[in-house]
Length: 171
Image (spheres, rainbow, N blue to C red):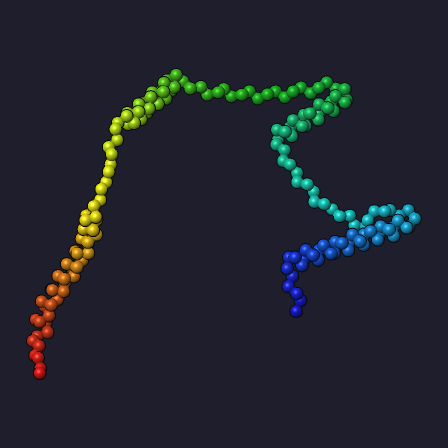
């Protein structure tokens, strides 16, 4: 039965094979160097992963393109490219005097209500629960249940002699 391949075994095998590969590449390079006109490069070059590319915004790409065009125009001796016309900014929204007055009035009303509520003395709510009341409240439902059971039992016993008839005692 073959041994179980764990991640440690697999990584060790990969490292071993890569070491063998570099050793073989070095030997191949030595042999090629011995040939007339041979190169010293290894047969297989190892590739490193390409670095991650940064994202550049469309506006930045546009600025870069314009700058490059301006540089080439300068090299060719042409006149500089005209700067692109800036987009007109939309007018800022302004608050009307009536709207501002309405907001101020609403704020004053709200703050006046809050100050009035804060100035009123708050009633001190103390709650005392006595032990007798608490136990009486807890015992009340139990007593009601016991009373109901007693009534049902009494009703059953009252109807029993009529249903079963008389019982004779034998000695």
